Length: 59
Image (cartoon, rainbow, N blue to C red; front, side, top):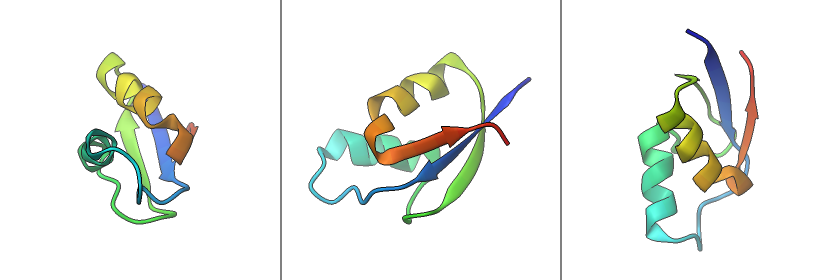
């Protein structure tokens, strides 16, 4: 299965609470923190929801 690398680039301060919960679900807490997640439709949906805060790439 493929993976996707996700990095938090912008602060979630001032964003809706739901978006902050999505970031927690992805495992992102700090700016410039990078996590590797499986490339599934569920993860892609989470990335799409808060994509304006993230940088996405391949590991």
